[in-house]
Length: 164
Length: 214
Image (cartoon, rainbow over all chains, first blue to last red; front, side, top):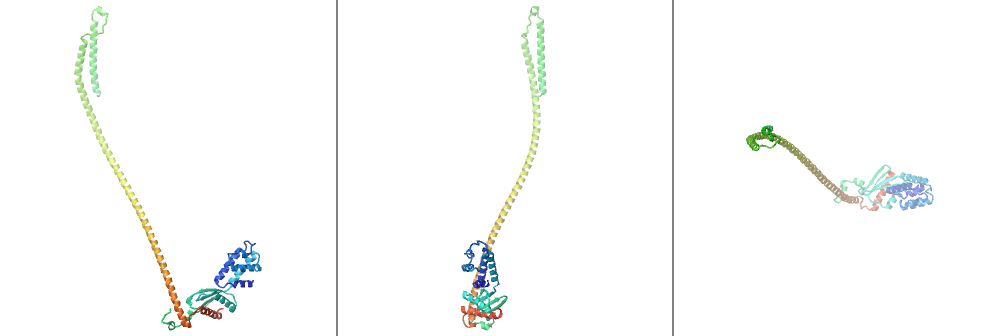
């Protein structure tokens, strides 16, 4: 089951993805007891993302998602609990990141830290560059603006322009 | 004509009737004394002298009685009219007194009515003035409310404009700051920061954090 969950979680990169996924699971939990003669993936047509619906169809056909409504409910409840246990990393960065870059970060965490994470990204150009990182109660400021604060006024005065 | 006059006239007529009865009796007596051959036939005719005498006597009596009656009647009439005048005068005085009383009452009544009317008019005027005042107050309130609303709207709009202006200016300032910061950063790290630099700096930051918190 864990492998199935990990496979599903691979698609979740940011906090926004996570919230959307939780919302879709809540919806599935509501419909599992209705029209049970119809496959679940058909019942949620138009109500969840198509990509997620295709994933459901595949899992239902493979028998990963159980047939009975009660078992289906338990499956989604477990999935929700699994998702809520995934740690979140807050990253404040100076630019608008691309999808690829976000995947790179996620991959970095998987490879370097051996765990799945959900990225909570904030874009703040004032930090100039680098990142301010918050993880499980720890906070580190690796921004360029902090580095610049270390400069002397003489070093700050560049080309006749005065910053502050 | 009062009782006294009636009494005089009655006496006169009584005397006249007594004379007529006496003369009638005398005539019957003479007839009874006539001869036997005539005795068998009772004549009820008056003598030829009787009627003229009677007429003469009546005429004399009437002539004598008329001035007296006239005088009496005149006196009675005078007395009667004097009394009537006195009564009329008294009644007139009474009437005048009554009229005076009535007039006074009417004046008093009119005065009261006038006073009441005056009060009513005053009250009505006060009420009207009150209504007008109330209406005026309401109008002033409405105007005040309207003016206050307009002012508040203007204030809100002005505040919004100021807020927008502040945001706009802050945005401009921010842009300027970013520009300056970029230039400072460029001077600091020796070149301008592009996307790949940003990505590299973030990965570097993660590497540093890995040692400390991950």
